[in-house]
Image (cartoon, rainbow, N blue to C red; front, top):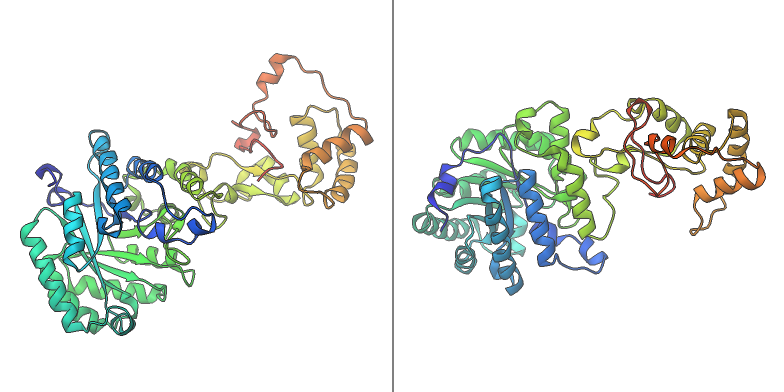
Length: 443
C-alpha cells in the first residue's frame, strides 16, 4: 500500500498532467516488430521510466501484470526505479491498465499499483463484436467491481474509460458514466480509432465537464486521421487536465499524441501554466532515447527533432549562416535541440561550399573560385554511390581539379575555431548564434 503521505488524495494535480503510456500503448506499436525487437526489454523500461520521472511526468501507465509473467516482473522492476527517485523527484504514480475484471484488479493491487485505469468498450462496434455486453450489463459489472475497489483500496486513484468513446453516442456514454461517477477520480474519453475532429472534441469535453464537475477528464487521441495532436490541444484548451501521451507518439497503428509535441505547442501558444513542472530542455534527449530503443532516428514528423533544424536548399543554407531565424521560427534550443544541421548535397549553393572549404577545411579560396567549384560539385553529386560522401567529392574537386592549398594555422588559432562540420568535434557556436552539426554530409 502507498504511504499515506504519497496518496493521490494528498496530491494537487497541475494544470496539465501527462499520463505517459509509452510502456503500455507504446509497446503496441508495430515499429517494434518492424525492427525485429517486438518488446521493450526490462533495461529499456527502466531507462525510459527514469527519464520520464526526471522529465517531470507524475503518471505512468503500465500493462496489468496479468498480461504476462514478463510484464508482472517488469512492473516490480519499474516500481523499484520509481522508489529510488522519490527523494529526488517526488512521487510518481504507476497506473495499471485493467479490464473490469477481478483478475486484472487483483494482479495490479498485488504488484503495488498506485491506480487502476479501468476500460471497457462502449461503442456499438465494441458491444456487438468485441466483448458482447450491452450497456446495462456493462453498468452492472463495472459499477460492482469499481465500488469494491473504492471500498477496499481507498488510496488508489481510479479512472474509468468507455473505450471508443467518440463512436459512442453521448446519451449512451452518459448512461454508463452516470452510474460510475461517484466512485472514480477521472473519466477517460479515448478516441480509440482516431475518428474525432477538434470541434467534436471541444463539444464532448464541454458536455462532460458540465455533467461531471467533480470528476477530472483524461484524453487519449489516436492519430488514424492525423489529428491526435490537434485534438489533444483542443481538449486541453477546453479544460481537460489529464492527457495520455507517448514518447514520439508511438502506439497502436498510427500512434497517439506525442508528449514533447504537445508540450512544445502549448509553450508556443503561451499556455505556460500547462508546461509548468516539465523539464522542457530534456525534450529532445528523451526523444533520442526513445528512438534509440526502437532502433531508428527521431521521426521527421516529430516537431522536437534535429530534422526541424536541418537545411538542404542553398538559399536556406545561406540565410541560416547569417541568422537562423530566417528559416527557424521556434525556440528549439529551449527544448534541447541545440544544433542546426546543414547538409552538403545537390541543392547546396556556392555560399556553403565557400564556407565549408574556407572555414571548416582551411582552404585558401575566394568567392569566384567557390562558385566554379560549386558548379562542378552539383554535377558530380548526383552520381554519388552510397559509400561516397558529398564531403569527399567536394574535397577531391577542390584539391585535384582546382589545386587549392590549405592554410597552415597555428594550433592556438585552431583552438579558437569553435565551429567544425567534420566528424572530429562536436559544435558549440557560430557567427550570429547558429549552431551546426558535427557532420554536414551525414543525416
